[in-house]
Structures are given as C-alpha cells and as structure tokens.
Image 1: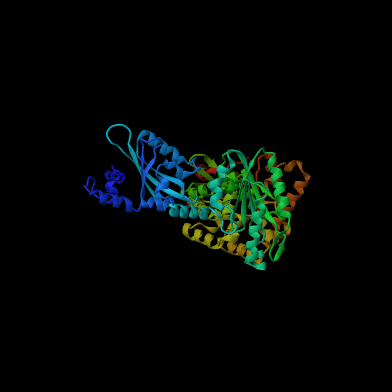
Image 2: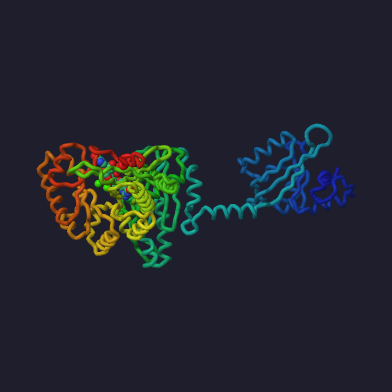
Length: 568
Ligand code: C2E
Ligand code: CA
Ligand code: CA
C-alpha cells in the first residue's frame, strides 16, 4: 500500500470530506505538498521505523527523505531527552492513543526548533495501531517570541537584573524553603547624581551597582525601583545574617568607577529576616518600612524591620476607621462630672467628658481614643458635634431651674489652631439658644505659651461671645503665672497633682495659694480638680478656692443620672 494513502483516513485535516474517494495521484500530491510536515511510522517494524516523510518535513528538519526513513522518530530530539513531553508521548504510544505535544527538536544542522507534534494512530483491524502518522509544525518563532516577551517582562532592561515582578515571582523558588534575609537598598541622592553628572552616568552607576551586588553571593538580586535594589539570601543559619549585612556594607562603601566619574555613593538599607516560605510580598513591604526608617536616620543607619511597628500602624488604621464610623453612628456621648461651690457644697455646674459608647466593647474613656482623634484631626468633627450636644443638654437642664448650671467643655489645641472655633461657638449659640454664660471652654496651658497675637485674638473673640474660658490642668505645663495676666480667662483649673496630698505638702500649699491669689486679682475663679479626700476639700476651702470637682463629690455621670441631680 502506498504510504500516502495511510494519511487518507485523516482527510479532514486537508479540508476534504472524510471518506472521499480520491485517485492515488491526488492523495499523494496533497500529502506531499501539505504545509505541515508529515511522517508515517510503522509500529510493527522493529523500533517503529519511519517509512515516509513529506516535503514539508524535509524543509522543517533539514533531513532529506533518505536520511529520515528507517530511523526512529526520537532522533529529532538528539540527546535532549529529559523533556516532560517525551514521557507523556511514550505513555500515549504504549496505550495506542493519539497525542499532541510540544517538543524541543533539532534540525540536521543542530539548531533547535520547537515542534508542535500531533501523533495520530492508524489501526488496521483489532489490536494496537499499525501506524502512527505524525504532523509536525515548526512553532519556533511564536515560542521564542513569547519567551523573549516573558523575559523582557521580568528583566530590568538597563541592568539585566530581574525586576520587581521577577523578584516576587522567583523569590520562593530561589530560597528553596530556607530562612531568608531580604535587603532593600536605596541610593541616597540619586536624583542629584543624575542631575549633576547626567543620565548616562546615572545609568552606568546603576549597572555598576547591580554588578557589584551580583558578587555578594545573594540568591536573588533585583532592581525593584528606579534607584532601589533588593537582595534575597537563603540563610544557612540566623547567625549568617549579620555577616552578610557586613559584607554588603563593606562592598558598598567602595567607590564606583564608571566612565567619566568616580563616585562615593551612600545607601539607605532596610532589611528583614523571614521564616522558610514567608510571603515575598510581605517581606518586601516590611523591608521597605525598614528602609524608610533608615532614610530618616541621620547617618542612613541600616534598619531592621520591627514587627511591632507594623502591628501598631495596622491598629491605628483600624482605630481611625472605627472612630470615623463611631462618629457617624453617634457613638460619642458625654458624661457629666458635677462641680460644687466649696463654701456650700451646692452643685453649680458640670464638666462634660466624652465617652465612646462602643457597640461591642462598651464604654471607652478618652484615654483610649482622644490622642488618635487629635493626631488624625477627627477631634475637630467629634468636638464640633459634641459642643452642640452639650449645649442642647444645658438648655434642657436649665429650662426649669431658678439658678442655671454652667457646663464646661474640653477643647484640644488642634481645635483652636485648625478650625474656626469662634464661628463654631457662635453657630452653636444661635442654633441651640444656649445662654453663653452657661458655657465654658477648657483649654490647655500650652496654648498660653504660644503667646501669639492670633491666639490672644481668638481668646478675646470667644470671651466677647459671652462664654467662659478656663485653663485646664493648670500647673502641669510650662506656662508661668505671667501668661495668665495677658489672657482674658474666667477660670483656672488647678491640676489634680496639686490637690492630691495638699494637706501634707508645704510646697504645694505655696503654689496653690499663689494661684488662688493671682486668679483673684484677675477676676478668675479657681476650680480644684480631682478632689478625693475630705481633708483636701477642707484645705482648698480654707485657702479660698471657690469650686471643686472630684470623686469625693461624684464620678462623671451619664446624662440621665446627672439630670436627676440637676432636678433635685
Ligand atoms: P481632664 O479634662 O483633666 O478631665 C478630668 C479627668 O479626671 C476625667 O477623666 C475625670 O474622670 C477624671 N477625674 C475626675 N475626678 C477625679 C478624681 O477625683 N480622681 C481621679 N483620679 N480622677 C478624676 P476622663 O474623663 O478619663 O478624661 C480624661 C481626659 O480626656 C480629660 O482630662 C480631657 O483632657 C480629655 N477629654 C475628656 N473629654 C474630652 C472632650 O470632650 N474633648 C477633648 N478634647 N478632650 C476631652
Ligand atoms: Ca478638663
Ligand atoms: Ca483637668
């Protein structure tokens, strides 16, 4: 039987109806002229010899028909026999099945070509296939192009190093389950080098750095940013890390000589060690955080990543989001701590103290969140909403009282310096109808120390609105008594530290006496804070302090409970 007719059962490959009856001449010219290389192997012959190849086969492989016929197909792979596809092909042949594989094959001149091979079994009756017809297609060009694109995708074109993507992709493989050291480097003042010497020298320097980093025995060196490199070391033991860092340090301290310049370059260095199998992305991020620390240190000290820092940063982010949510969910409420007139013990007012009524964690005191609220600026919104709430509450409490109660509201420095507190207070007065005389803002001593005309102007305009101004925690800051004279204050709150143990400390008595005397001269009243003992109360009263608050009288109370006291 002519060999080409073996191919005829596969007529549909040539766009002909299966089973078409073709004169032998037509069939052989179709097979002979096909674009695909075609070979036929006789499976019944020893070593499954090739019995036919067509013209395209000759062109693709470079072997003439006489050279191919009589050989086993595998001669095309030469010694490159460890290809996984070969194993799969062998299994399919043993099972008498067809298979499509992509193989590295070699032409007669030894050059490699990628071969998409489609093997089709031809049976003649029962039993294993009598023949296999192989269709071969040279796919070298697309494969090589794809390879080249892939390698371009993963290579930094300037230095030839892996780039950031490659670093992340290859990290796990190269570290092979060892403990790892990941170092990130940033060239100090690289912009100035580019600016001063020109981009050619900048580029040459980057290449020289990449080259030198390549000599340090790192398992992976990559250029991960414009002027940043990353190195990955698989560690034999943890003790190896300091030595590697030292070697890196010494190596980078050497000058870099490039055509046209001889440069001493300084580097910021951040590093992190990780457990076997640690996620590359995480390590890169952590080394990056350490690198940022290094950049901030005066001598570009190499910095190790500290895990608490990240935990803290994460916690802050979560808390900030939580605070924002709490604000829109109205979870901030005020508790009221009564203030009493010392001679009589009568409640004359209250300090509003913010609380966070958290859905899951219950009532949170300011210590848990005020600092963060100040640092993120959220305090501006919390304070603005709170002032309105407290003013409304004051109006409600005083509606039926013959002698109205006064309410103090804490204002942090940020609210005075970063918001228009005067307008806010004016709006709150307008909106709630509160008598300004019922409202006192408590400010911190540090604002006085600023002693600027602007700050003084804000104080004046607030006082002009008719509200009171109080200096909180007086005596704990750096301000001297002299500042008090310059500011239009209506009240001084004597810090708890002076009240606590007052009866037993001559020094405290002298200070408290001086404050009370000065306040008297300025027309300001004094409130003793944190009074817990009757002896403290009695001594304050004896020294002429007009007002006090503290646990001796009452804890801060929820609005509903304070309302009961106010009504009594
Ligand atoms: P502060 O203004 O000095 O408030 C007095 C703090 O002392 C309150 O703590 C109060 O509960 C506590 N205290 C009262 N009496 C006694 C006592 O006899 N003994 C002791 N040991 N402590 C007493 P709280 O409520 O935890 O507030 C802490 C700080 O948080 C306040 O100190 C204030 O600086 C700030 N804060 C409270 N509410 C606000 C607010 O609405 N806005 C702003 N910006 N800060 C606030
Ligand atoms: Ca206060
Ligand atoms: Ca205070």
